[in-house]
Figure: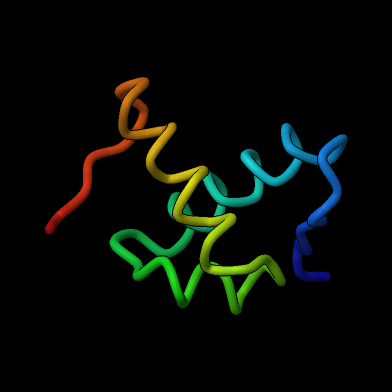
Length: 62
């Protein structure tokens, strides 16, 4: 069963985990592809990715 995100604010820690898991499983991956894969909006994924970059958990390949 695929992990699916939630757009509700209380689900934020879960959304963060599934975005990280998507990156871990797929390696370099576009934000749009993450969003489609986990059922979140691109805006939500972009916000999570930006926070993860700022905290040093991931690096963007741009």
